[in-house]
Image (tube, rainbow, N blue to C red; front, side):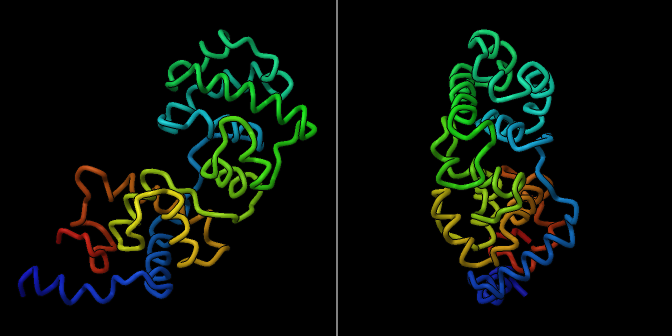
Length: 224
């Protein structure tokens, strides 16, 4: 059987339907049962700091930076009072350190002054904080407060979901809108962890390992 014929027979199974999405989810969960947030944190405030730092930076690098940062600025009040140049020196290796330092100080001041030093657990309040967009808010709500308000869409999630035929969109907000229609709310937080893990281990950006992928019989982008 030719590859063209195989692809043609496979195509009907790749429609973005809840049934197709359910099979994808079940296989991902079976393969990555321990998938979780890769950022190290002990409370919502620490996770918010780490997530802001993770923009254009690897989680591994962020986890190298945050221990010293958390120790020096353990509370919103302490971080709000930080000297920018001292904070910048600590987070310098995470990239875009001046902008991130400004956002961290502004975020901490808002949390301390407007929210009683408690990181808010509502989308509207979170996205009003300096340096916090919908993606960051979804990370906090899902991983710190166990609230499934949306799906975190990073580069891995974007790439994997497009290749799997779950979305044709390239804008993260539109990708999220497609995904929440396909997957049940209770799976949204875990869903992003699963796609991220798959993107790191198998569905690589440059050279996806389709030959060992447990989704290659379903994936419309499979090379095997």
